[in-house]
Amino acid sequence: MKEELLLQLEIDQLNARYAAVLDERRFDEWPEFFLPEGRYQVQARENFDRGLPLALIAMESQGMMKDRVYGITQTIFHGPYYTRHVLSPAQLLAQDGGRIRAQAHYAVFRTRPGDASEVYNVGRYVDEIERTPQGLRFASRLCVYDSEMVLNSLIYPI
Amino acid sequence: MNAPDTLSRWTRPGSSRVPFWAYTAPQLYREELQKIFYGPHWCYVGLEIEVPNPGDFRLTWVGERQVIMVRDRFGDKGIRVVENRCAHRGVRFCQQPHGNARSWTCPYHQWTYKLDGELAGLPFKNGVKDGEQVNGGMPADFDVKQHGLTQLRVAVLHGLVFATFSDSVEPLEDYLGPQILPWLERIFRGRQLTLLGYNRQRIPGNWKLMMENIKDPYHPGLLHTWFVTFGLWRADQKSRMVLDDAGRHAVMISRRNDGGENKAVTQGVTSFKANMTLADPRILDVVPEPWWKVPDPSKPGAEIMPSVTMVTLFPSLIIQQQVNSLSTRHIVPRGEGEFDFVWTHFGFADDSEEMQRRRLRQANLFGPAGFVSADDGEVIAFSQDGFRQWGEEGETLCELGGTGTGGTEHMVTETLIRSMYAYWRKVMGV
Image (cartoon, rainbow over all chains, first blue to last red; front, side, top):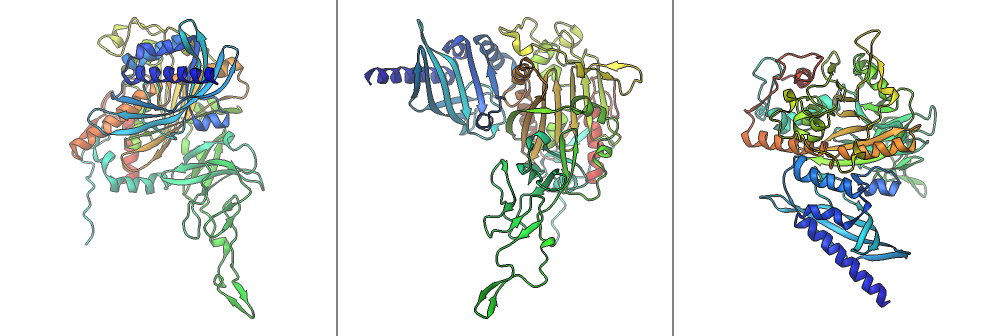
């Protein structure tokens, strides 16, 4: 029990650091949360629930995530905005071998310059996490979002 | 007293200047719904593979009217499209986005319809017996045949489903025209599609801006870094702009090149990134497919092998083939300043696992978060902002390649936009 509580705390800390990196726009650090062959997907709940494979963003390696960071900072033209991630405590689902399965709920608010904050993307993280010498890393983070409409565009990672 | 006519008139000849009121006037927009979306035009409602089995349905839209696309259980088991509005008290009775149904029942008073919209029955039609007397009931001359759901005309072409409220519109193939049809056949004819999934975005701009965006070959090599840098779409590529006779539909056809430096099209273009390389190039793992090559419809005896065809079918459908990524994009207008944009990505039933993965990887370029397409939603919103802040007297300028209409054998032109507005002016009577 104590071990499980410690692990839960560890994952909560991981999620808190992850949210801080995004909300503080330290995008270059974002791929470091993943294993080199880690996967990152943002997928509409509609597709997830129906077993349809399309995702809004589907990255299959740290390399692709670095390319995404280059995209959001250098190439994708967009109106700038801040994000604010509000996360629930992690729920431990399973542990087998070195692989931890967990999920957490998130709400992301968007604030554009000169504008009020708005609810931007709401969903849950479905995670597979591995322990490495550098700490916990995502083998896979799947963001399943409830929001039926993307508010025009989604540029920065969730 | 009649309300004053707030609509400005189109003051210039031709269609190379589009007045801002065409995007911002609410009354004009209401007329567009009537004359375009509910008038004599065919509107896309979905793909046949979305409703494979009898009783399968999904909610979709024609303009602002929600309709149900359903595969009938009877007769030819064909696809029917009915309006999601009870004939009794106007309730939008179906609330499940998709599913399988035997019939439609409105929850309010249990009026029940067959899948094709015919009224099957209603409670207490013949009144309720109370001893010798019968209380209430519908009038003796009440005819169930007169009180079904609105049934739309339906046409299915190579798995694409279109519907219309109009009795007068010509058959779908005539509506699309012989110039456009070969480019639909190239992708769809004789092929079983596989549904890969949906992306949905709400864009704060007038619906026509989305049509213009995909009739505008000028911007992709300028706005979109990925297109100019990796040669997916830019002005030094072999290209063709195709139109139907009315000028309302179009196909932008092009063939990718190797990208890289070409001062004629990259010098001074800030979105061109000469030294950009991908850390993981699998997103651009393009593999040409045999069906890309077809007999050239406009050059008998020759063949043509485009890597990209962007089809705009007026008023509300865009069909994308950009290398190995395929999608339909459905425009659902929501007032003069907003529309929903629904992307349905698909592949083919005979795709290998690798090909399906490739299509899904390349989907990272498109949609609301795409390396390319996210830009488009953003500039559309900023266009609408610009129109709104200046007011109705402003106008856009679409004179690249002149002021005329018609097809071209290059992409340095805004002819497709001018052609659409020439048609739009006729329909709207402005």
